[in-house]
Length: 301
Image (cartoon, rainbow, N blue to C red; front, top):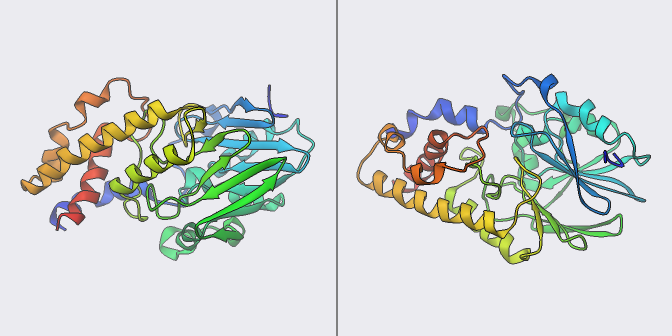
């Protein structure tokens, strides 16, 4: 149903800007061709799926109103509202999992509808920086936290916590305790090569640590909503991502210590034995390797 509806680093600078630019306008996306799919996860809890470029919005609907996780790009706003159209409730809260535009660029439109925007304090600080193409003030979170916070809403205990810097240094993971559903943003989950916000405090080791932490806070029965591609994953997919990260990290670090350039490492295809079965998305194997190299090279100095 619709809801109730460096020398070696310099060569990759341009790619890094394209990979991790935060609050930017989307380019080369045909928003008219994107459909929102609505998937029911639990009573009163849904996922609005916008595909690889748009990600997954979690929606809690109940007597207290509507609670959203992420807002997609601004041109998707009307499609999101159409998916919510059958609910008589108003949007009360919006939590951003991190600052990238495919998760936050719809904030301003949601704020104009009265939504209170919540994020980790680092996310708001980074969004507000002029060099990050700061959005209008209305798009910035008005409620921030440091370690964690809990919202009691629609009969749920919604636990919002900050892992150590992972995808970025302002990530939020959201756990609906009663429904046993967790939205992990862009922390490794669905079987795609994940983006690493190397210019926003993200790191390979942080991604690994955050995914391990998810498996400690959640449990094997938890329904885990990834930031992109597919509505639900579990511990199996997260463990597969952890295994991949560990192997690729070691291969790339060994190559860096041997003096290999990023071009040489990318050409060596260190992800080749993991490429089959990947879900695609914006981060190609070569792009992922470049991100891993960029992070590890600065640590190897």
